[in-house]
Image 1 (cartoon, rainbow, N blue to C red):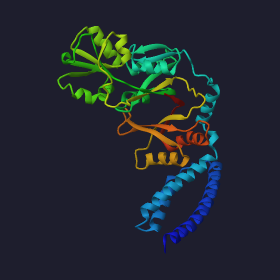
Image 2: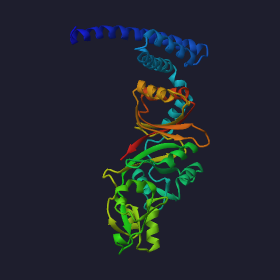
Image 3: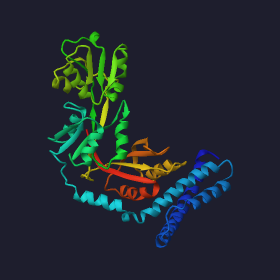
Image 4: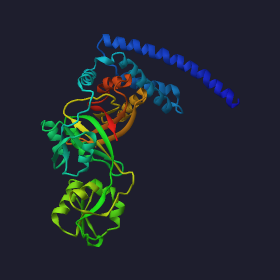
Length: 380
């Protein structure tokens, strides 16, 4: 047979598959009603394992793995369809709906905001991009920002979460596991690092450079040109500039922003020394309360999955079934729990879509622990 005839045969088989798939899903819906009436869970692992074993044996050795993969996806589709019939009963869905109703349409203009570092920090610059005229309270470390939100000292907090060159800010992810909060907005900012010195300092005079570890990682190529210079990591790039200024020394420098050069009376000895010209850092704005503003199209969640094969696949399969795009997936070990990990997801989906509603109602049943971190807009 030629290609056109083979394709005709495929089309005929596909017509049968579509018809049989519809019949199967109709029966799945009837099963969902039965389970609901009799208080039975949607997921029945023993039944699925038996079914996968049976169809694999029927398929034969050559097709066993392919058949198992096909039916694993078919089971995901079936469970998703069953859950869809009662999607609006979830307590989380009710909480999200209430937050959408209670949140004002206009994003706050002049709140009290917690930032890590000192005047001139990149977090401060991000804060002033997110809010029109914020009142800023500075804290030495990221833990201080989370604590300020927990204790109600500040309404919002600004935290760097990832960089396009250096990757995720792991300390922030670790603290996210420990604290209760909601993400209400995110901001992506282009970051330029500059070598700042006290006036009169020459490049050959420098014996030590201060900066945050992420800034140091982002400027690796430049630092390789200064092999005999000590590089010291501190809490913040603005703190590095402040240290250089207060020291009055001509043998130290800071990797920091242009704003810090003016703020602390320093000279820019080398500008834009980061490895990549499109170096960007993403910041999140957090709140103690769940606030969901109009137009929110990004959602962040955290979950703990069973420590067994296929656990992550089941989540990704559900997202695939619902057509929800994953823009970030991060895993971090959970403190004091051996070989257990918290998975962090950033998702693209409108809060008004049926897919979003169904996902929020499904996830409690798909993982051991689940935390909804919020839905928000990202500004640039």
